[in-house]
Image (cartoon, rainbow, N blue to C red):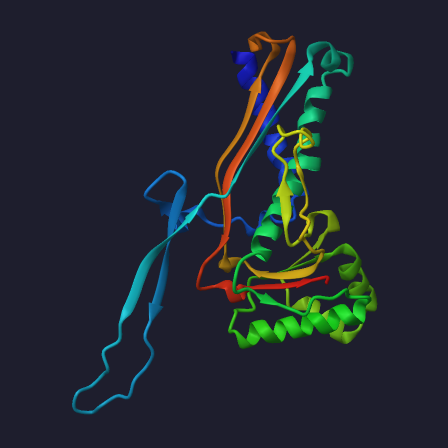
Length: 290
């Protein structure tokens, strides 16, 4: 048992470190204190507040009576995925005890982080009421710059605070804009505290999560949905997002405790939520190809 504890203490932080490094949407994870448990274990509720505006002040009767409408809005957890990997003891020993660590790190780098990003973008892209540009391919940096300016104007007019806006764009577009090296390109990029290049393989308006059991889906992971479109860029105001991992389990089972095979096992599961506050949908701007 002590060996298992030592292995977990050494290995689990490594998995988390790999995920944080490889995921491009880890910046969107919010403060769980802003939500509380709902009526059942599958949902959380969060506060939504609205107040009435100013009225004319009367020197005799004074102020108009305003109202505060505070209500709790519920949303369900929408992500529950996991995997179990086994590494034969001899395979691990013959690679000087690195096969097990490599398997876990590879899971995080090539499967967990990309899927978490793809799910986040596809979920946000499918939210009703978000702002969208005209569906088209952005051929060059100039076209990208023009679309960014249009997006900025839209969000400014919708009174989305500039602080906290994150720009996610395909690597090709973001690199092309940086290479422009003009006053306009520098100025627009400076408006975003965080700018993240996103591999196109994670950047779709819709994805299908493969269940790992059905014929043809045994390998698990995800794929671009038939109706999905390639995303050019998204601007996301972080305070508009609910991104919360309720449960992340990285369990290590040594071969000595494995009744089925002489193999070490790593189990990984993530149970969480990606959504948008109902009164903050203007905090998402999406541009995708036709």
